[in-house]
Amino acid sequence: MAGSYRGQPRQESGAPKPLRTAGQDGTVIVVLVATEEELPGARASLRQLGLTAPEVVAPSDTRRLLLSPVIDESRGAQVVTRLRSEGRLAVLRPAGGPQLGAWTRHTRPVLVGDRLAVCFAWSEHDRRGLANLVEIDPNGGFGTGDHPSTRLLLEALASGITGGERVLDVGCGSGVLGLCALRLGASNMVGVDIETQAIDATRRNAALNGFERRVQATRTTLDGIEGAFDVVLANIGRAGIVELAPQLLARVSPNGWLGVSGMAPAQCSLVAALLRPLQVVERRMCDDWPALVLAHRPFGHQPQSPKFAALPSSVKC
Ligand SMILES: C[S@@+](CC[C@H](N)C(=O)[O-])C[C@H]1O[C@@H](n2cnc3c(N)ncnc32)[C@H](O)[C@@H]1O
Image 1 (cartoon, helix red, strand yellow):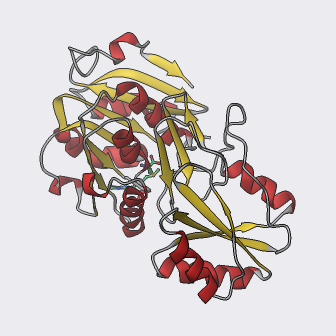
Image 2 (image 1 turned 90 degrees about the vertical axis):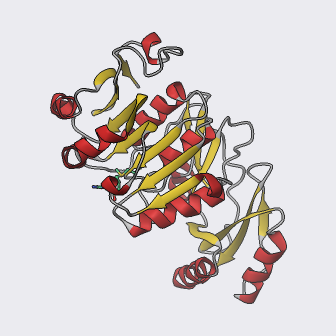
C-alpha cells in the first residue's frame, strides 16, 4: 500500500539463479565481500578472528565472497561488527532451512528490463552478464532497488539517461538512484540526505562501484547546493516534496527533468501543482505507487533527443 515503505517480494521471473546454498554445517554463515586482489587480506582477517578457512564463491568476474560457518549467531554478529569496524564489508546469513530460502529470494538482483541491474554486494546469485550492474550495501541507508518508489525512478533513469548528465539525488538513502544514473552514463552525482547513515552508505556504495571520484554526498540542506542539474531525483514522498518544492524547482536546469516518487496516487495532482511551472511529461505506476517525471518543456526534457516524447504519458510497471 502506498504511504508506507515496506519490503516488496523480489521478481521471480528472469532473475539469475543462486550459485550455491552451501554451508549447512554451521548455524550461520559470515559472508565477507572482497575482490580477487583483496582475498589474501580478507582470509587473514577471518583467520585472526578464529574462523576456519572459508569457501570462496565468485558471483561475477570481479566479486569474491568468502563464506565462513559460525556455530553461534551472537558470535557471528560479533565477527561481522568487527570486520565492518576494520572497513570490510560483511553480513551474516542463515546456514540452511527455510530462512536460507527466504534469504536467497531476498538477495536476488533487481532487474530493470535489460538495461540496469541492482544487487546486494554479498548476494550469492550469479550476476555475470547483467547489464549496467550496481552493487549495494544499504546498511542503514534506504534503497536496494526493489521498492516500487525506487524502482519507478530506476525505470525513468533507464529510459531517460543519455550520457553526461549532472545528477542531484535528493534523499539519496543508499545512493542507489544516483549510482544507477552514473552506471547508465551520467557524469557525476550529488547526493543529499538528512541522515548521516545515508551519507555514509552513499559514499561506501560509490566506492564499491568505483565511482568515488564522481560522487559527492552531503547532509547540507538543499538550499546549500549550488547550480542546476540535468536530472533531479526525489523519492521523498508528499511531505518531503511539499517541504522542498521551491528548492527542487530551482535545481532543475532549463533542459533538465525531475523525477519524484513516494507519494500516494491521490497526492499526484497536489505534487504536480506544487512543482509548476514544470509540467508532467510522464506518469508511471507500480502497485499503488506513482512516480512523476516533470520538465520545463511539454514533450521531453531535451528537444534534440525527445526520449519521453516517445513514451505514453502514463506507463504501468
Ligand atoms: C524513501 S527513501 C529513498 C532512498 C533512495 N533515494 C531510493 O530511492 O531508494 C527517502 C530518503 O529521503 C531522506 N529524506 C527525508 N526527508 C528529507 C529532506 N527533507 N531532505 C533530504 N533528505 C530527506 C530520508 O532520510 C531517506 O533516506
